[in-house]
Amino acid sequence: MENDLYKTPEAPLLRDDLPTEQLYAGFWRRFLATILDTVFILLITIPLTYLVYGDAFLDSEAFVMGGADVVINYLLPFILVIAFWIYKSATPGKMMMGIKIIDAETGGKPSTGQYIGRYFGYILSTIALLLGYFWVIWDKKKQGWHDKLAKTLVVRT
Image 1 (cartoon, rainbow, N blue to C red):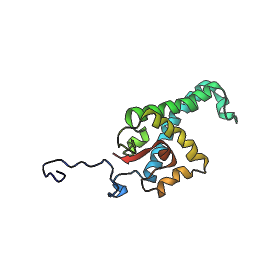
Image 2 (image 1 turned 90 degrees about the vertical axis):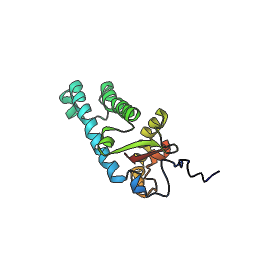
Image 3 (image 1 turned 90 degrees about the horizontal axis):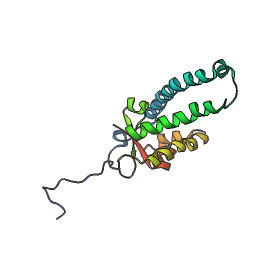
Image 4 (image 1 turned 120 degrees about the vertical axis):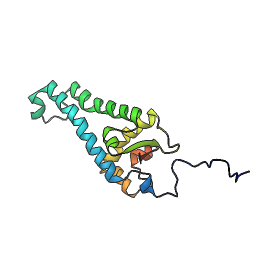
C-alpha cells in the first residue's frame, strides 16, 4: 500500500524541486570562507617559516626555500584542511560562514578519499584561470570543478 497515511514519508536530504538558495552555498559565501581560511593558514605558516628561515624568508625570491618550506607551506596546510574536513566537514572559514561539505549522492559525510580528491581538485579549478571556482556561479547545484570531481556539495548548515 503506497499511500499509507500513517507511514512517515521518505524524503531525500536534497531535493531538486526546492530552490537552490535554500540548500547550496553560493559563490560569495564560499569565497568569503576561502578568504577566512587563507588568513587562518597564513597566521600559522608565516610565523613558522620566519622562525625557520629568519629574514632570508622575507628577502628570498625562491619558489621553495628548502625542505622546511615544503613541510610548512605545502604539507601542513594540506594536513590541516583535510583534518578539518574529516572531523568537522568544514574548515574554520566554512564554519564561520555556516556551510559544510557533504557527499553529493547520499547527503552524508564524504569519505577521506573524496576529501583528498577534492583538495587536489583545487589545482584543476585553479590552473584553468580559476574557472573551476567560478563554475559555482553557473552550476545548478553550486558545484565547482573540485566538487564535481570529488562528488561533493557545499551546503548551508
